[in-house]
Length: 131
Image 1: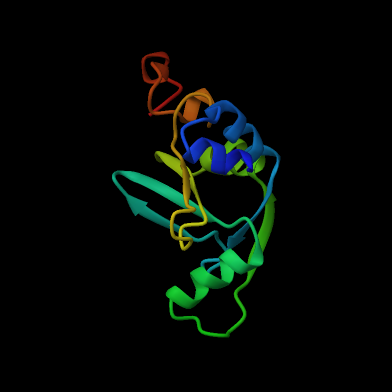
Image 2: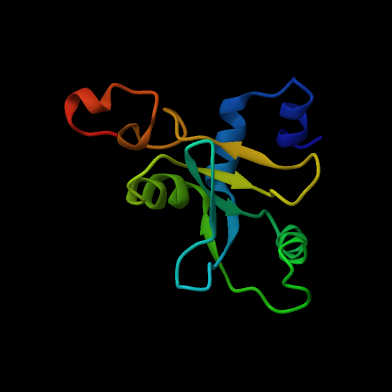
């Protein structure tokens, strides 16, 4: 059983899941305008990433792309949460495999996942560093 499956079964270590995400190469589709595909929900901008081409293809089919090629970037999870998320200038997190039934994972903009300056659960605002 992989770390993600153990966590879903209630037996995993959330920190280990975050560590696995950070070490994984994730596929992030292009939004067509040179940026990365994202969606807004619950006041958070979610960068959408996929663990493999099969999961990305499911997403493309659900978005109506059919068999057309979908451009994407292959990025380390750590780069997404450490560099890209803080640069967005708004609360942002990482949504992985959103088109996979019972397989999606969400990494919200909180301490321990994103840098403190980009986390919504810190007192960084009081220091003039956060939102």
